[in-house]
Length: 319
Image (cartoon, rainbow, N blue to C red; front, side):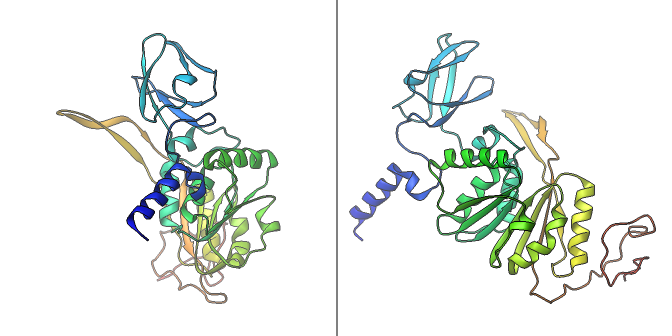
């Protein structure tokens, strides 16, 4: 293809980003788009642009018409004389400001899921529950139009919120997405999934179903909020036997204040939100190698009542 033809094609894709379902928009701001307005103190406001509307602040209003048909990344002054930075939101901005049914998975954890669960273009991914759709948008962007994301959500009201948020982000219904209202265990009929990501109260109840859905080598990832959930899920994976040794971790994010020689940690940080656990599916009927590291004294003592591998005795004196 000649350079001129290639440049013209790339220009067309930038003018019509919905064709690639990236959720990224270019060109003049249009009605129906979300923008983020930031004041001099860093406070941010999400605004849906509509002709004739005014965004009201304590320092005067900002007319939507003064932004519509204009460029992205501009500074606009309110009637009270305060300057606001206007930008199209990034996916991370959109996910934390979207209307919510259930709580959203925050960007710091979404990034870990996409990377550590190895979500790739063309992958077939199962997600449950869909919540408000924050993780769903990231999964869909990662798999692209040639992949697929099948999301399960028990609550119809949460599913509707997720559908609206995902559709608003991409500008249309994403061709790679299927949203099912129902329980994963009861509804799952897939046997060739590359990845499964669960965000629910009791992911251990889904281990058998997920084992039947994942291809050998596929990644199972769960997002759990508490230590008790973490323990039960990890031990259920071990007891199942056909997953690799689970890996569990959390991520903490801290900003830094930088002004000349005044360089120090920020006063606030994103601390614990949840734990992430990943494990990989063994081939059907193949047991994972038994963990050889000796457990901590009392870890599986008389007070422990959780799941246990069938080849582990009550004293757990594994060497």
